[in-house]
Length: 518
Ligand code: GDP
Image (tube, rainbow, N blue to C red):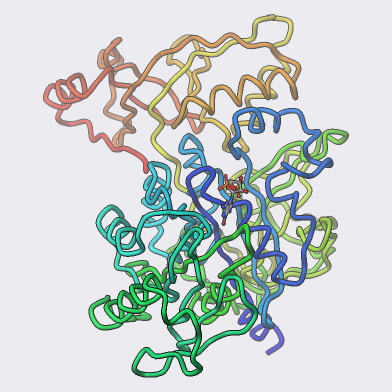
C-alpha cells in the first residue's frame, strides 16, 4: 500500500526547447515554485561555480548551448515531480531521445516571438516517436510576439497535433494584462495582485477599468472563439500525445507557472511501466525493484574521475544498501551510493520509488540501457540507437598513448556520447555521429579527460544499414561505395556512399536484407 501511494504521487517529465526559448528559466522557476529551490544553477551549470569548473562544460558555455542534461526533483501540491533537462541542440537528439525514454510526459517551451523553431520541430518529432503526453508553454508574453492564434495554428500545422489552450493571454508586451484560466474562468493579472472572475457571458464579475481597453475586448472575443470553435478537451488524446494543453506566460517574470503546474499535475500521467525483452510489461507497483540506465554523465566533479549513471526506477522501491543484479552480466552488488538532485545540493538518498530518477556512482560498471533488478529477473528492452549519418576515422596522435586512447573511446561510447565502428580488415576505429558537434565534444573530452590528442579524418556522410541475414554477406560485396564495417557489438554494417549506391546494391544482392536503426 505504502509503495502504491508513493508511486501515485510521482510525475516525471522532460523539458524540451530550441535554445534560448527559456527552458533554463522555466526550470528554475518551476523549482522555485515547488518551494524547494535547489540551487537552480545545477540546471545548466551556468550559474553554479561548482559544475562550471568542469572543463568540458566550457564547450557548451562558449557555444551557448546545453550539451548535458540534468535531473531534479521538487515538491508541488503533494506531488513529487521529477524534471529532466534535455540538450537543446539537435546534434544531441539521440541523448534527448534516451531521456524521453525515462519520462512519462514532456513539456515543450516555445518563444512567443519565434514560434516553432527548427530544433523544436526536431525534438518534438523525437517526442512524438515516444507517444507520450506533451504540454506546451508559450513563453515571453511580457514582450511583443506573434498573435496567439497564429502560434496555435503554427503548432497544429507544423507539429500535426491538436491544441487546447488552458490559459489565454490578454494582450502582450507592454499591454500584457494577464491570462484567463479556462478551467475556472478567472483572470490572473500580470501586474496586479487580485484575480478577477469572468461570468458565463464573458463579463467581469466585478467592474474593472480594463473593460474599456480595446485590446482587452479583442482578447475576450478571441477567448470566446477558442471556447466555441477550438478543439475539444480530450484526456485520451492528451495521453497519446495527439492533443497538447497550451499555456501562456513569462518564465522570467514567474508568471503563468502556477497555472501550468496546477493543470500539469491533474493531467500528466503517473509513472507508467516498461517492457522487458521478453515482452512482459512490468507495472510500477510491482513488488520487486527494477530500473534502467538511460544516461551516464562523466566527471561531474573534476576532482574525482567518477561517473554518475542516471537510472529510471521502473518498479517497486529502491533502498540504499540494497543488493541489485546487473542484467547484462548477472553480477550482484550492493548499491551504497545513490543520489538525487534536490534542495540546494545533490543529496544522498535512502529510498526512491518507481518514476524517480536516481544517480548511481559508477566506476565504469554501467552502460546505457543496462537494467538493474532485485528479486525476479528482468531486463528492459534496449534503448534505441539512432542511425548515424556522419563518420570520422580516428587515431591517437601519439602512438604511445594507445592505452589512454582506447580507454577514452570505450568510456565515451559507453556514455552514448558517440558511436563506435571499426573497418573490416584493419580494425581502424571509425566514429559515427548524428551531428557534427558530437565529434567536437569527443575531441575536446579526449584531450581534457584522457589526455590524448587525436587525429580525425572525415569519412563524410554515409547511409548506414545493418543486415538481418549476416551469414549471407560475402567479402566481395565490400567496396568503397558499399563499405563494410563492424559496429561495437561486432555486427556488420554497410556504409553506402549515397542513395544511388544503396539502390544499386539492393538490386545486385536482393538476398541481403538491409535495415536502419531509429
Ligand atoms: P534556454 O536556452 O531555452 O535554456 O533559455 P534561457 O532560459 O537561458 O533563456 C534565454 C534568454 O531568454 C535569457 O536571456 C532569459 O533571461 C530570457 N527569458 C527567459 N524567459 C523569458 C521571459 O519570460 N521573458 C523575457 N523577456 N525573457 C525571457
